[in-house]
Structures are given as C-alpha cells and as structure tokens.
Amino acid sequence: MKLDPFYLIVDSADWIRRLVPLGVKLVQLRIKDQPEDVLRREIAASKIICADHGCQLIVNDYWQLAIDEGCDFVHLGQEDLAEADVGAIRSAGLKLGVSTHDGEELDTALSVDPDYVALGPVYPTILKKMKWAPQGVEKIARWKAQVGDLPLVAIGGLNPERLPGVFENGADVAAVVTDITLNADPEAQTREWIAATETWRNS
Ligand SMILES: Cc1ncc(COP(=O)(O)OP(=O)(O)O)c(N)n1
Ligand SMILES: Cc1nc(C(=O)O)sc1CCOP(=O)(O)O
Ligand SMILES: [Mg+2]
Image 1 (cartoon, protein in one colour):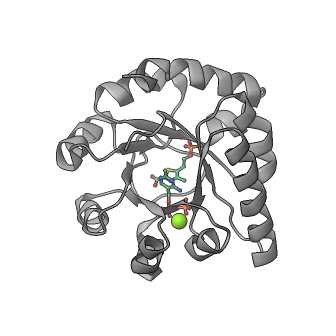
Image 2: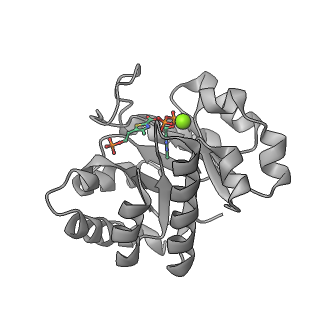
C-alpha cells in the first residue's frame, strides 16, 4: 500500500477543514479527553471533509467509533492495541497503523499484520511527555530493514529541514503535529510540507 509521504496529525475537524483543502492527502484525527458525542461529531465531520478532498482519514485511538462512523483506517498505540479487538477492526474492513518505540513493540505490532508501523520519537517532541529518548534517524534504517515493504512512518520533532534525513534512512512517511499547528502560519507551513515531500510522493 502506498501512503502519502506527508502525514498531518491534528486534534479537530476544524483543523481538517482548514488544512486538508490545501492538498493534504493523509491526515490523522487525534483527539484527547472529549466526551463520546463530541468525538462522534468530530469524526463524522472529518470523514466528510476528507472524502470531499480525496484525503485518507485515520482515526487515532477510537477504533469502535471509527467503525461506527464508517471510517476505514485507525491508528493504535501499544496500550490501545492491547485493549482493542483487532478481529473486529479487521472484520469491519478497517486498516490499522501501529506505533512502536522499541524492538519488543515492533514484534507486537508486526504480529497483528498492520498496514503501517510508526517509529518515534525520531527527534525530541514538545507535544507530549515520552519515556523514550529521541531515536535518531539511524534507527529508521534499522526499522526499515525489519519491516521490508510495509510502510514505515517516522514521527516526532519533524520539520521540513529534517525530512531528507528521515526519507534517506528509509521512512516512507513523515508525520507531524506542532511544526504545523503551532506555526505562526499553519497554511503556509502545510504548503511547505507538501512541497518538501514532493520528491517522495511519486517515487
Ligand atoms: C503516526 C502516529 N505515530 C504514533 C502515534 C502515537 O500513538 P500512541 O502511542 O497511542 O499515542 P497517542 O497519539 O494516542 O497519544 C500516533 N498517534 N500516530
Ligand atoms: C503523537 C506522537 N507519538 C509519538 C511517538 O513517538 O509515538 S511522537 C508524537 C508527537 C509528534 O508531534 P510533533 O510532530 O509535534 O513532535
Ligand atoms: Mg493512542
């Protein structure tokens, strides 16, 4: 499966409405600490916007809501995965991406036959506190050697200047949150990311 090399992660349908029309083709809705009715509304709205713009929507964490709302791709971390019904996700026809941070987690991820594996944090991230030190781009090459043709997503502290090192070491996709959402001009930075990933879009 070919995924767009630019993977935007945002926390609301408003962000999706604002940035996806600029040409984003792969987006994750990552919402934390909201009641179920809000989550459902946000997922449903995001799904419509993404469908209108030919963008793949990936729902973080809430796999059951993603199934209920007719979405087709979810992202789960290791703790999410431990509690999820992977059979139900697969029976409903959804694709599944899984986070990894060490070799044991990679084995766990590969055991569920995921549609991509994410490795992070490649660089320090300010988005959330993490127990892993920055992995460095060399680890991307080690991960790619293990996952083969399975798409490998790099995440954590990425910006356009860091993309060549990420892709040259074997990542297929680069995921980003704060370099765009905390940027003074998120629209301009989104365009910058689209341009900076162009080489890897058609390779
Ligand atoms: C592409 C991608 N990679 C990693 C994560 C992190 O998932 P997880 O470890 O479950 O942490 P939360 O994002 O849920 O806080 C991700 N969301 N997306
Ligand atoms: C949500 C997330 N997961 C990570 C992991 O390593 O699993 S790093 C991360 C944060 C990514 O945000 P930013 O692009 O702002 O650094
Ligand atoms: Mg999670």
